Amino acid sequence: MFFSDARTQREYNESHIITARRIEQSPTGEYLVPDSEELGCVRYCVVYDCRTSSLDCCDYEEEEKGKGTAVQYARSLQQFTRHPVLVLKGGYKRFSACYPFLRTQKILWMPQELDNFQPYPVEILPAKLYMGNFDQACDQQIQKDLKIKAQVNISEQPATLSAGFIRLSDEGSCRLRHRC
Image 1: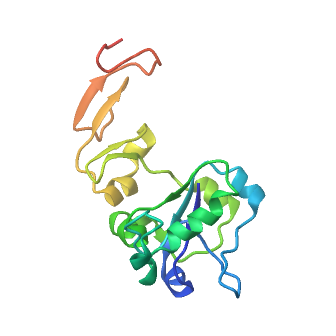
Image 2: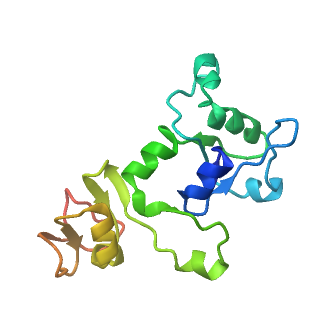
């Protein structure tokens, strides 16, 4: 995943999404594209600004207020990627309100730090329902960050943290509707 921050340098320095890179501009105001070879390998390229509310290219009123930066940059970046460039709806303001634990002031990351970064469960219903693995279920920091109060464990072995338990084999042919 590749995050591009289209906010001002001051806003980026205050805080940004973990591993995000700030978008640079030339003296003429053109957006500078990061290494195109690197972008060609990225499946998810996400651009955000302060609070993008519209993805409409004809939303001139929003551009005048300085909020259309993410959409503009995503369009210029699209020609260098094999997959669609995504724009974060609501921008950094909305994202950081929902996920304050995924923001940082750190700019450079060592490869070992990135390898040790623990992924979070997939959010199924915003702030309500998550799907994760056993390690995520046992991670107290994830429990705290996501404000998880109860769990339903669907596996072969019950976990000590579960509020509910459904015994189900970890085979590809098993379905929740038809127990193995």
